Image (cartoon, rainbow over all chains, first blue to last red; front, side, top):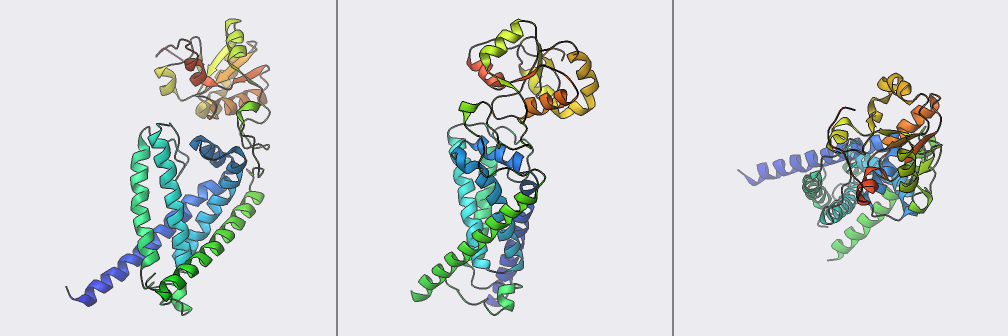
Length: 161
Length: 172
């Protein structure tokens, strides 16, 4: 395989990862935006945040998921969106891992409000680690094909981060 | 090295912008939502069942009771209702409880109302302080005219933790 083909595959891969992650975060935000009551209970169930922060998180987090996901799909502020998503995933991984470690029975609430199966936290955590790898790939990649950033002439800026 | 620092600064600046826009979107969406919540909830256990507060909270309008009151009402012949899914009921429920899963409540509401008729008080429970099935069912019953509906907020978790017996299996 020539270097050129390799680069092409890399660019296609990072674009696919960007669209997938963006779509995933938009998708994950919808049910939370539609039902803040249910999502606040999910956050409460994690037993991590203090009471005063729960509603605030239930309101703000899905908005951030929606906006960062949409920006990532559009390829606008790609690094900021990818960094937001990467940090969100780190927070999710820490929260899942913390509750897994202390054996708390809780609902993920990640992609739907359906009850997660007991012991599902480990699978969910590993899944998030995979997503985090994708987010870092998108964040650190030199180029961002098919993106608004590129259209606006910002695509090549900020390489080698 | 200069580019590295510059890129990192730029990524962080963009991050701040993305988070601010996201927070604004979240606040606007909540304000426009039929299920909006106040920005400060009522999650302290000291005040009974924790909830997001506001009229759309499943706990809204319900009367919550603790283990002591629940045990006394049950001993006094109150109708005891397990609002969890039937599988969980079969795995273990408070002795004497009937099963009316909150999820099926709308379908079974007729039957439930018949059972509850004249049996006040009615004590409803689910897993514990976090589940909403007992609240949803209690609300449905109240709104259908059943009087004396109470939610045993600590649910089967608190019941078990107090060393009280549970019954396995059995017909709802």
